[in-house]
Length: 300
Image (cartoon, rainbow, N blue to C red; front, side, top):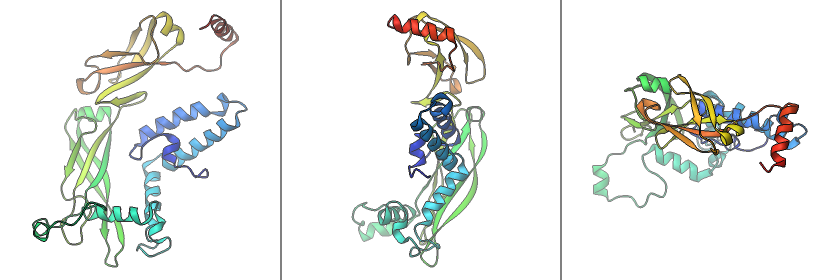
């Protein structure tokens, strides 16, 4: 990125974020800083361009993988450890390199003294585990099935370098499996040059859908409510996770952040929390501006 900032930080997402989460964050920030909503604001325009560049950099799985390969190539330039950039070519330098090799050998830097010789003899060496996410939609997770995914494992080359090997796998999910649950696939991890291959730990990541998020295993859905409806009460249109539409009653005197819980309307028969947020509005007409001005004058 031209700005030099980490695209994950620009978009406010974690490094394990999937396509849907990154896309939602990008859309939210793009709306917030769009030049049409911030006329004449040079800082907002620059931020908008930065958000766009960040999404271009990590918006797809392919783009994120290209970034990882670029960072990893800094270890040894041409495939070994002594090429251009050397050990320092990766962020973190030698320390991160040792961490990576430690993971591949099933141990980490700073893990303490080596165990006694007798104990080492009883514990044959084994490659480290590979952590990977399986991304599915709410409908796919509710129905279950067999889903493909790709992992990348490490192995040492004969010349002392490190290379990656991609593998395409499938995992069967029973219907209604919990978001964030993990499954261990034996023998699908990093390869050890003198011992067994490690395992793959596959964590299920269910995309909650637009305007929804996971909170302690329960779905929370944002519902946009006009200010007048929050103050005076009323009804708003809501689309539930299963696609059904309905009208939600908003009590008089509600506040942004208030919630209504709907038992059994969430994922796999769980509860669904509907959380009020202030509805976004476009450009106001003359009558609306006059009404808002009157509210301001009355202290609202």
